[in-house]
Each structure stands twice: as C-alpha cells, then as structure tokens.
Image (cartoon, rainbow, N blue to C red; front, side, top):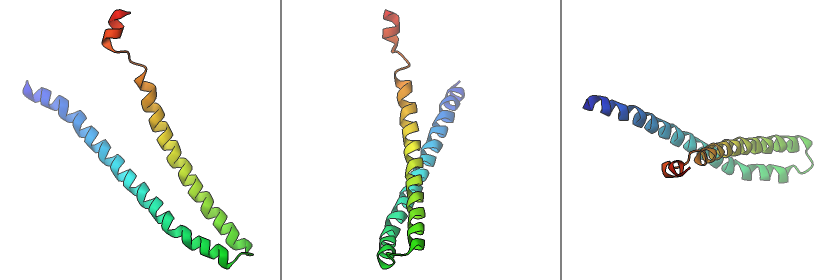
Length: 102
C-alpha cells in the first residue's frame, strides 16, 4: 500500500520539478538575450553618430529596434497570459466552508 501512495506523490512531484527546471532554463536564456542586446545597443548609437545622413544605417537601426520591440512584445505577452491565467482560477473555486453556508 505504501508503494501506491509513494507513486501517487512521486509522479506529480517529478512533473513539478521538471516544469520548474524548464522555466528556470527559459528565464536564464531570456536574461542572457536581454543582456546581449544591452551590450550591443551602444555600438548602434556610435554607428548612428558616425553616419548621420546614411539612409542605409537608419534602415538597419530601425530593423534592429523593431526586432527588440518584437522581443519585448513576445515576453510581455507570455508574462501577461501567465499572470492572467493564474489569476482567473483563484476566484473560481470557493472555500469549502463558504460552500457549506450556501
């Protein structure tokens, strides 16, 4: 009987640990990407000042900044959906004592 109870708890616990590990790895990758972007930004500012009248440089800078904004939009969307989905479930379940009173 103890083996059945142990297995009942080990499966979900293993899943939770794997999910937490995957989230941590994804977060570390996002932090690295944002750090890399932060390191590159000063170089682009230098290019813009070196070639103030170059339409080609301006187009490249616009594309670069567009990609950064797209990355931020994706990250914001992920974070917003995650917090929204966790919040919507909080109010859906009433505590047992409140259900008994109704």
